[in-house]
Length: 183
Image 1 (cartoon, rainbow, N blue to C red):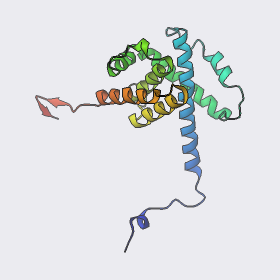
Image 2: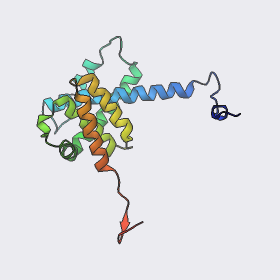
Image 3: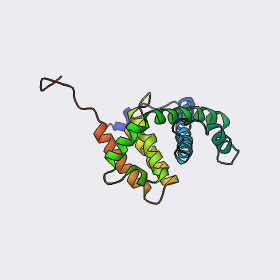
Image 4: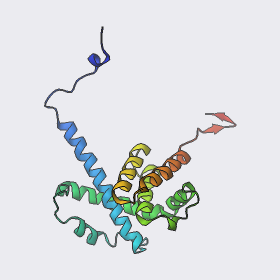
């Protein structure tokens, strides 16, 4: 009797190039999101939305200090570049993003949402709806939930997950129709 597993192509031993590249890419993306969150927090705290990257050099200096669990310098540099782009994009689309969050977070005024959660929501919403290229909702939501667990309050991750799920449902493309018929 043939098993399904017998037909799955196996990766040749010693071919770790793709897996190493994939791990580096994932580490860079996760790191850039965490750096962007810290930058967004500083921007939000200082109400510096008009010039969102004003604090970026100071923040990078603080974040870039050597620590045991810091990513490599190359990953950190690439991540920082991406985090600045994310922060700039979020700043440009902030009104629209905040509107989406307010609509999805029923009975929660935006200013009532704590700053960490609010900026996690902004980041994930931007990545799902406005970033180039768009990030799949599953990845954006998962990363946001992980950041909420790490940086937010005890149950922040549940709130973040619920709001982002609602934004995802609302944002899903509806079929294009012509004259009442699906095209």
